[in-house]
Each structure stands twice: as structure tokens, then as C-alpha cells.
Length: 126
Image 1 (tube, helix red, strand yellow):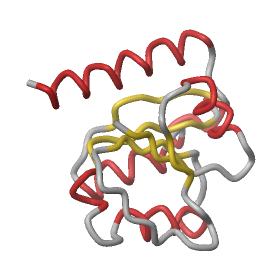
Image 2 (spheres, rainbow, N blue to C red):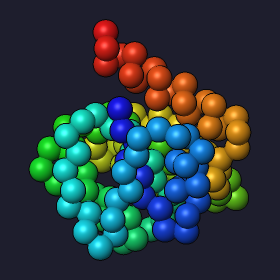
Image 3 (spheres, one colour):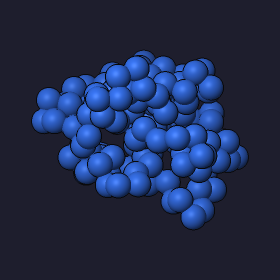
């Protein structure tokens, strides 16, 4: 399983680097890249105009078929708006919000997110 992520400030990229699993970063200048395998999407929290490239990626060719779930990063000070980008994507595409973390994630976040990934991989092999 691949992790696909979007990062502007580097917080999400730092989180992904801690995970140490195969990943692909959505290119802001050309999001039209096909992923031919199941993946989890990890996104930071930004206005829709900023994250529109993520929707472009999801809707490109067969990418939406392979999207299993979404995780979101953000700042808990946002209150109800914490990880709203991931929540919106989950709702818009009918997929589960599988994980949330603050900033670039703690060591516990890394450990817990790896468990989520392993659960998805186990379901796929059943």
C-alpha cells in the first residue's frame, strides 16, 4: 500500500518521512499522476483553493478507485476546523477519515498511524 500526501509547509512531509513507508507527494504544478495501487491520502488543513490540486489528483484517471481513506494534519487551536480538509475529502469521496495528527505528528502518532496502515493491508489480503 502506498501513502499519497500533499505538503505545503513541510509538516505533512516530515510526518510521512517518519512513517518510512512507500509514498508519493502530489506535485502542486502537475497533480495529474495515476496511482495504480490502493493508497491512503494524507493532507494538511488549508482552504479549498489551496488544496484543489488534491481533488485534481483524486479525480485523475483511476485514482479515486484506489483511494481507501484519508488522514489529516493540522493545529488543534483551529477547534472545530481541525483537519477540516481531510473531513471534507472524506465526505466528498465517501471514504473514511482514518487518522488525525497535529503538526508533523508525535512518536505516538507515527506508531498509531502505522497500525492503521497495517489494518488496511490486512483487510486487503483477506
